[in-house]
Length: 192
Image: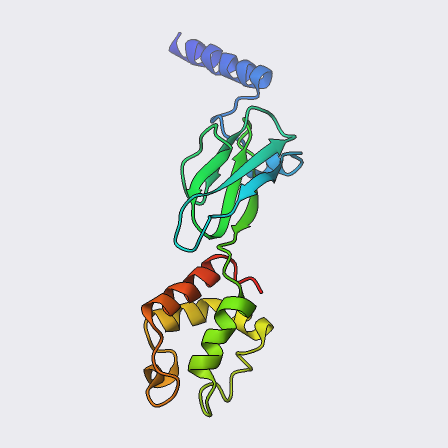
């Protein structure tokens, strides 16, 4: 009798699985999202008003996939809000997720208003333009080179290992304000 009960029980489970798809979790497997039409884009963005302020915002919108959507910025938690406020300068990744669990990411950069030509190049010219400062690793006075090394520049000026020898005998060390301006330029996407 117990064998017959087990057989009936297993048969019922099989029939239920055939009818419902027998999913073991509510989140779809990654292969379920390969044909998803989910898309996310930046609807509006407001840059922070100045270097060091956190009054910028990004609004995104999602389409396709299966609504309703939830959103997260960086590694934050998902919520229904598609507007992210109190942001400083920088590049932000925002993820949209639909009800099937499919996700799409959009990146958006908020500028701090600090530019290479107007703000950073004059610092480099005053503090770094001397023989032996950057003889073998490129023309740091060229915007393309400076942008490609922006994160290194931020790190080395922040720890005061740049300018070379902390500027002794040349243009002098960077002021705290100059270091903050360079960091702000990098955080704002290193615009020209």
